[in-house]
Image (cartoon, rainbow, N blue to C red; front, side, top):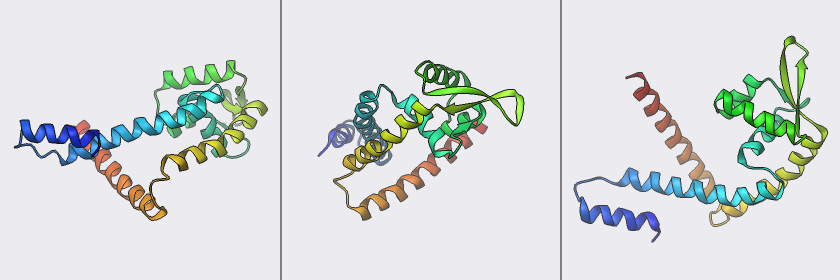
Length: 169
């Protein structure tokens, strides 16, 4: 029995008329997200980062050489607000991990690029990051991880569709 089971039992006693199946799933996903975040945050902190900074560095790394993107492309890849991204870039630039360069395709704009120090750091961190993620899921078999990933992808599509419909109202 986990914490969510306790909550579901309490609701069943107080409001037996409610169907709490969705609550059980969403509650577990929320608690799982917090547990995953805690495990990964320790890795980020060891390297002087947080999840937000790591996200930008990892996005630039996975974009491939020359490890540079426009601020707009970074926004699209990370799905944060413009002001939030500017703040992240400013902090990473102060840390010497990224730099703003003139965009070679449009001199009126800039691109955000990993510095050599940023490239070294994020490359070193990725192995530890992936290992941490594997440890967080070591209680599941490979097949269970694949099944969970498939179900979570389906749940994500369902939630995003529901949210999009609600936004149109």
